[in-house]
Length: 196
Ligand code: CUA
Image 1 (cartoon, rainbow, N blue to C red):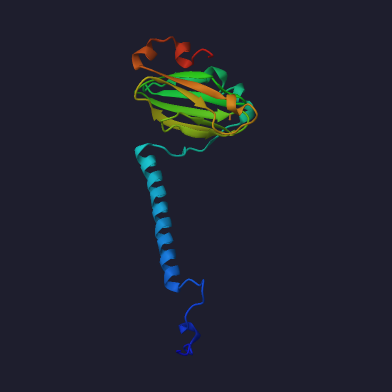
Image 2 (cartoon, rainbow, N blue to C red):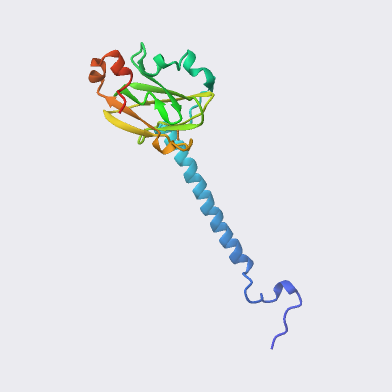
């Protein structure tokens, strides 16, 4: 029987010890897998940001949540949909426990729409499924999201940020009308829809 080599590094490994080459190969594979996952996630962010306009709102605007109702942009008479001189629409909404005000808004299709939201109390969330509209509504800040609807339809909009015991019942409706039908409505009907 051959003597074991003098150098301990050259002796056969005991049972259950994984050789260094096998460890290195496994680690390299995992590095490649993790690198690929990171690359895919970065690509998803870039593609949805560039192609789908899906990104966090970049404007930082502060507002005093205690005086929203007393005047300024989010006074009650300014809420809902307003048509700007350039033909685009601006929708102003307040999120509060546990409803959005107005509860339902109408917007024209095929028109640039800017949503401006703020909260009167705690953090809420505003999401229109299958569009790029998805933002948190944080007290003290104005969230702004721009979009355009390619056709008429109804979006039932759940609050998607847990905001208290009534969170599950907090929602609003965005009703997209064909441009001509929207224009034919009276001023108040254009601004908001009746409570559903
Ligand atoms: Cu508001 Cu959840």
